[in-house]
Length: 153
Image (cartoon, rainbow, N blue to C red; front, side, top):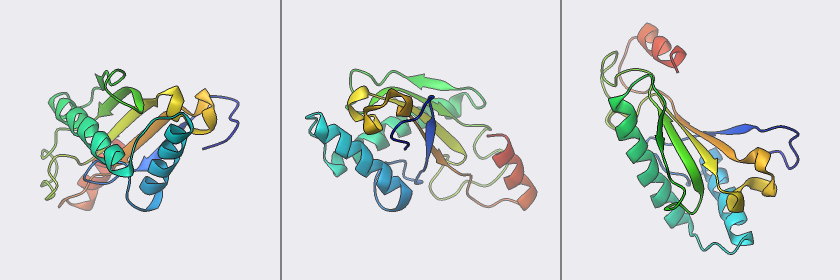
């Protein structure tokens, strides 16, 4: 995140197949940033709570998105979420249509867009309040099919 962006930016989180925010790498850094901002504003949120909460939200969005591939679906997370004001999900193609599903199921080629609440927005700058969480297609498919799925996102 940029401490002082002059326009609204969306930062991309390389998500996990289990659809949670946390753990290691870039996904873990996103969790750390959100938790630090929450703490600054007196919001009690543990890494485990953030992980479980984000997983529930994203699994719910995934269920909606696979019913409407190619369309952006929304989940109003504002009241129930300590971090997300609004959340959206997008699955570009019908899961399983172009490739065999991986062992994690239909969460292949999915992107979530979260509008963060002001209390957890990095650096307190509302231009930083968009987070994109994406999980790339995975599973067994010919290279051409995999490329087509990636391009449709």
